[in-house]
Image 1: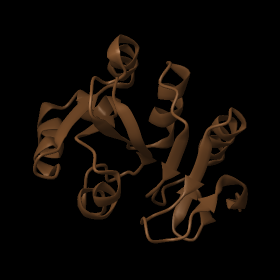
Image 2 (image 1 turned 60 degrees about the vertical axis):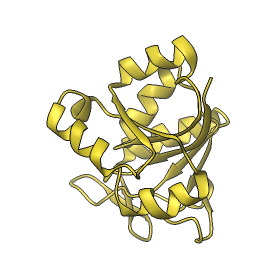
Image 3 (image 1 turned 90 degrees about the vertical axis):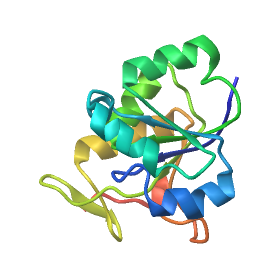
Image 4 (image 1 turned 180 degrees about the vertical axis):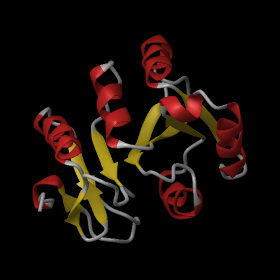
Amino acid sequence: MAEVGFVRIDSRMIHGQITTSWNNVVRASKIIVIDDIVAADEMLAMGLQFAAPVGTKAIVYSVEKAAAEWDKDQFGDGKVMVLFRDVDAAYRSWKSGFHYKKLNIGNIPTAPGRKPVYKTCFMSPDEYEKLKELNDLQVEVYLQFMPQEKLVTFDKLKMK
């Protein structure tokens, strides 16, 4: 059974902040990206594997495959960082049986139907409600872009 060291929503998935700042704190031996679109595209998945820090294995799963891997052996061994591209994947993963204790909100960019909830973090009402449901289920949902920044609890995020 792997130790889940960090779970984050970040539209950029594996990128500089993840490979340097966050992984220096978490020290993950594996980064698991859970996303149906990336899992279905071999080139995208391969690109993420190359973006992982040296010595850190990157694995891409669909939501369904991630739930099966979690059921089988809780992602194997080592320390794991789990990344979701969007709120929907995080929500569906929870509903499928991957019950994480904390969920960090990183980058959720602006898009049609999304409104600012905190500085440069944007959500649709549906995304906000899914995160509220997870928070109500005792998942500690919080926003923190970088490890050195102050953590912002879910109750501080407001739909505008």
